[in-house]
Length: 278
Image 1 (tube, one colour):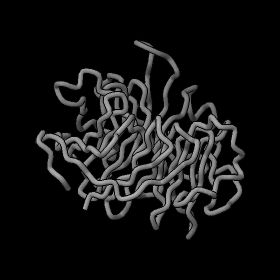
Image 2 (cartoon, rainbow, N blue to C red; image 1 turned 45 degrees about the vertical axis):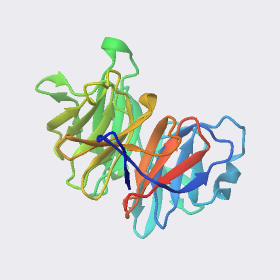
Image 3 (cartoon, rainbow, N blue to C red; image 1 turned 90 degrees about the horizontal axis):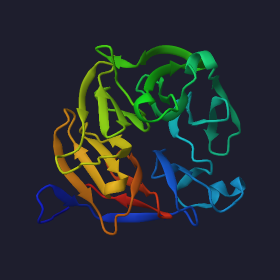
Image 4 (cartoon, rainbow, N blue to C red; image 1 turned 60 degrees about the vertical axis):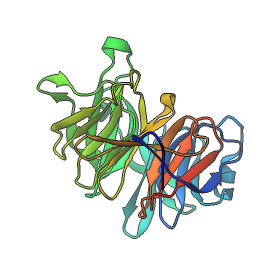
């Protein structure tokens, strides 16, 4: 790694690029294995989904701008994503979509589902939003196991709303739950008790977190798309440094592999950058 003049930033080399052709709006990423990804884009090209498997290093390509995550059932990898009315799964590779579990109105309480993450236990964390704006905007977080059984939900801290509009989510190695919210990253413990809020540094007057992932040291990596920054903080919320790379532009979706290589999907780029961190 090359240390730059500004102490709070580290430049990481780009080890490779994954070309997503004409898909310029990369929405979400999740790492599979062996250097392969599942990628969700906002489709603006009218391409047929049958082209899903034609991109190098991409196991599956969603054209619908869906939040996605990877889990395992028996020995198979399953891509979990939002369908029209339910969470669905697709066995990889080349599996057919099927209902993983129904998401009934009672389960969602009228909220709109956003980000997804898989826990060590195999349960699924789901971000929810009431689809309102400004002061009326409220978020919720639920933890589900198979067939839509809700284990618990996280909604308030000391009787105050905990989330405004939670979007992307991940679980840390210590099982903390890390959520991108409006102007903050909210981190709770495994039981849903608030640990801290990270609101960026003092010069981040409009900190706007999107994609989020955690490395093997439990550091939390956050894409700040509108400010063209990627933050790295430790597991207790202390700022470590900004991650930089050549020609960074609107980083939005993040994931990480077993070697701590960081995959960055940009909102206005057809390439996924793979950053070497070792």
